[in-house]
Length: 115
Image 1 (tube, rainbow, N blue to C red):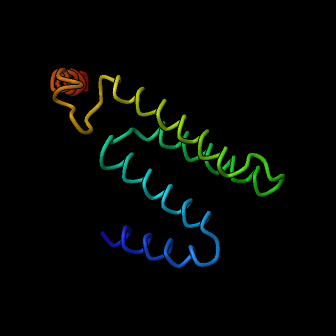
Image 2 (spheres, helix red, strand yellow):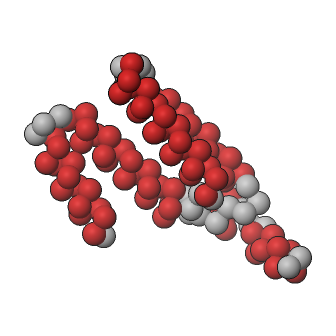
């Protein structure tokens, strides 16, 4: 809850200086909650998302490409792809896992029995 309050406060503060920075803060924090609390995405796809986000921001900083709207579209497409791949994973344990991945308990039992 503290992260959410601090992020919203920072975004509100940044909106006075540059609305785009406020949007970017909310975009990253929103993805944090999407990946960690809703989809419960595994570490590797989350790391891939972070590397792409930082890399595209670095390119924007150095060369002003891509523009921030294009960056957000690219990252949203990557988000959608990673979420779909995670939901199709046999280890999916996020929201609605009972319906989307009913074999999760069996997968987990097999994983534990192999140890």
